[in-house]
Length: 150
Image 1: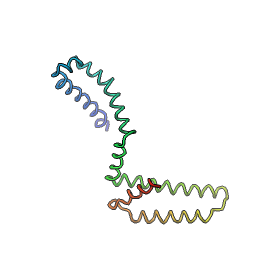
Image 2: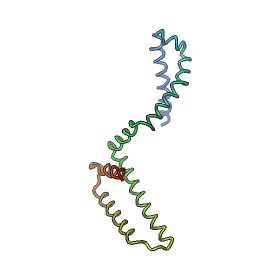
Image 3: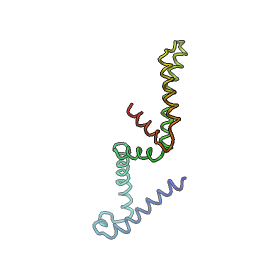
Image 4: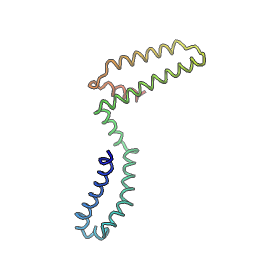
């Protein structure tokens, strides 16, 4: 894992710097006057290029519609990822409702019939959903879209 993640990245960066300098910059006098040596080129790339690329990556990740589109596509093309998110949403809804009831029981409060009806309705809805969903029919994505609208 360390090799494929870190060393490969470092070697790719070194390769890119070497190739761009010796095949591009050295052959163009204008660029050669800006970067007279390989060391200067590396210093400029490290102190100008890396912060610039970091800012561009941050903007892409946090501020653009492109990242949101990537995530949407990932959920649409990977049913296991969508299933995990939907299961988490279901568990969260059930836990919130159950904690409400536990709090009422711990305070010796009477649980209203509306709460029982709401739990029963939630249970039926989730049972129907779980029984009808599969990885092929995209019900998980429909559930996510409904949850977003609510």
